[in-house]
Structures are given as structure tokens and as C-alpha cells.
Image (cartoon, rainbow, N blue to C red; front, side, top):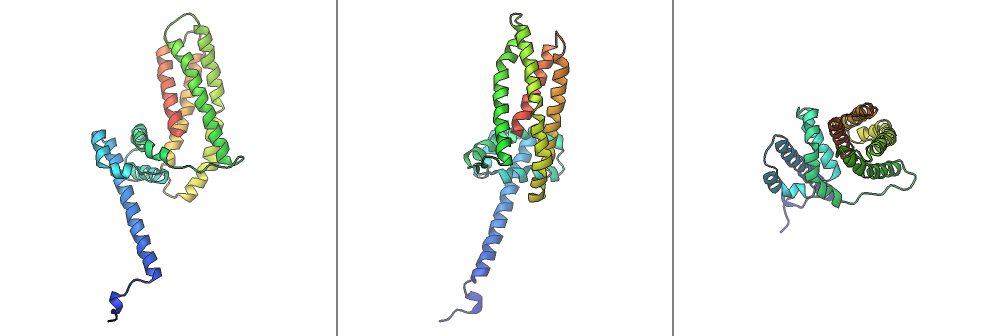
Amino acid sequence: MNSSPSEQAPSPVEQKHIAMTENSQSADERINQLTQFARRLIHGENGKMLIDEYQPWLETVNAMETMQTLDQLLEEGIPLATVKSQLGKILNVFYKSLQSQPIPEPTQGHFLHYLMLENRETEKRLAAIRPALKNFLQNNPAGEKTNLSQLRTFLQEIETYELHYLKKEYLLFPHLEEAFPQSRCLSIMWSFHDDFRKYRKQLSTLLASDKPDKAAINTLFGKLFFVIFPII
């Protein structure tokens, strides 16, 4: 018996349309779930319980979905300062999944290749300065001048890292805005860049003194490290 027209299988074009619709709905649901998780985390709910509840989405979150989640939080009206202050918590949860996904390696000579090299060099500098900072803060007169000199040299070196941010702001960000119209999350990046400039200048002023305030230096170095790592 022949099937009636209403019972016939969808044509290849119709099947493709159905698949696209289902994929779109699935993608929307993923962003909805990830945004719910981030929103509840920001509002102070128990992190472990939230991770258990949203585990299926958290264990497969990718970079684009991370951008979309942050963008959605800002679109909902959550203040940028609030999202930014909780970004570390969100990225810590997303980190394992993001790290497990392959990243296409840009070819040597590509713009992104050099940005990645600059990040690796900055990570080395941050690791190298920690012992000098620790020794300086321990109030041990022996070697204090040497440690202070090392901190000053570090700040001079790290000043060149601002060129890295300028490249991103004037070359990378316009491409991201074109490829990803919902680019409110870039405002978070801009804010971190501004913080880097502010904290570096404040540290330079402090370290210009022969007897700088160690408590203030400890606080500002902590803030400087905090804004550099999330950007990387």
C-alpha cells in the first residue's frame, strides 16, 4: 500500500532543515543552561551543588559558548563589574573542558602566533618575579635592595606588555566584533586591560620610593597578577 503524502518521509532538503532547527534549539538550550549556571553562581549559590546540577553542560562547554554566556549575562543587565569580579570562578569551572579541546595552532608568522608567544613570555616573567616579591615582603633586610631593584626591573619589562593589549584592541577585537556581533563580553577584556595599566602605574609610583609601603605593594601585585592571568 502506498503511503499518503502526509506520511511520506521528508525530502533531503526538509531533513536538512529539520536537523538545522533541532541543532539550533539544542545550541540555544546549552547557552540557556550555561547562563543559568553562571547567573546562580554569581548570586552566591553553592558552587559544588551547581556544578553537580549542570555537569552535562559544563563538561563540554567550548570557547564560543563561554563568550555567548558572558554576553548573555551582560545583556540581562548584570553589571559589568559584577560579572568581571566573578569571572575567575566561572572560568575555573569551565577550565577543564576548555583545556581538553584542541586549539588550532596558528602558523609561524601569523598574528595570533605572536600573541601566543608574548603570553608565554609574560607567564615566564610572572613566575620569575614571585621569589623576589616574596623575599621583599618578608621584611628581611638582607637582599632587600636587590629584591626592590628586581621588582622595579620587572615593572619596566612588563610595561612593554601593554603593546600586546594594543594589538588586541586595534587588530583582534574588530575581527571578533565582526564575526561575533553579540560582543558585549569584549567590554570585560577592555576593562581588564585598563586595570593592568592602572595597577602597573600605581606600582611604579610606589616602588619609586626607597622605603615603599609593603602592604600596598603586596595588594597591588596581587591585583596585577589577577588581571593578567584571566586575559591570557
